[in-house]
Amino acid sequence: MRLLNRSAGRLSRHRRGPVAGLLVILLGLLMAGGLFAAFSSSATAENSADGLTQSQKIEAGRKLFLLSCATCHGQNGEGVVAENGESNLGPSLVGVGAAAVHFQVETGRMPMAATGKQAPRKPAAFTEQETEYLAAYVASLAPGPAAPTKTDYDLDAVKGLSADEQRDAIVRGGKLFLTNCTACHNFEGSGGAMPWGRYAPPLKGVAKQHIYEAMLTGPQQMPVFSNNVLTPEDKRDIIAYIYSVNDKKQTPAYGGFGMKGLGPVAEGLMAWLVGIGGLVLFAYWIAAHTARTHKKEDA
Image 1 (cartoon, rainbow, N blue to C red):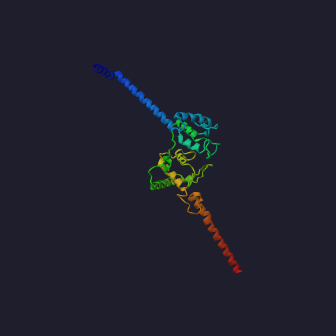
Image 2: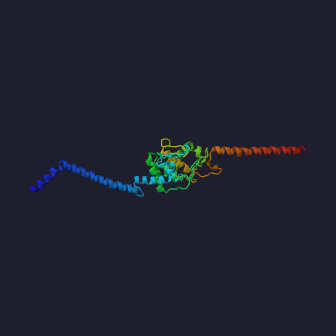
Image 3: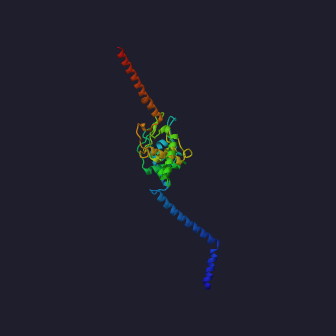
């Protein structure tokens, strides 16, 4: 019994020593670091469908960029100036963010088949995975707008909204669209011509994410509607309005010649040319016919 007490006393004195305390702290730090590394690596593998870390995605995107984009945008995304020094073969991508890459690449506008006034929409040249890599690399060049999540651009993805709240959001989106977008895209998003051979593309059938990214990044001649100008909720409501007016179940056609929703200017011009013009011609025909009748009676 005395031997046990003596050994316990020695252990107690060693535990209270400065070296023992330091060893306990080091052991705790090593265990905590090991657990953190294990959980973080497993979380990274789960978040990435292909199992690549963010740095690996950036490197993969850089290889794709050098192969397919550097000719116009430069080796480091700095842009390339034409030989005449007056125009750019490709603008700088520093600071455009992942949202711009997603929009331009997923809609097939980039890479351009040929230089022109405007990059038309066409089938995408890269897969979804390759687009993610390119976006990761361009986003690493400088801070810029990130790609939106589904709750940012899809009203149906927002939980807890009643039917009345969704209708109110669509109404707000309609007011914002009429104020900011109809000058170029017309009242139903049908698109329209613009100066210098450019055009505002139609919005029918465009993915919600791409409409959001276009507002966020301002591709080509479109103005940039940053989150300070139009909040994410404003953008989401505008998208909800665009989809509602093009959904015949929500907004049925009540008859008449809709003229593809080109708006009151085109409708007024049609009224003057066809409506009032037709009445003038009809009045002229009546007057001419009446004059001929009087001549026959006098003869």
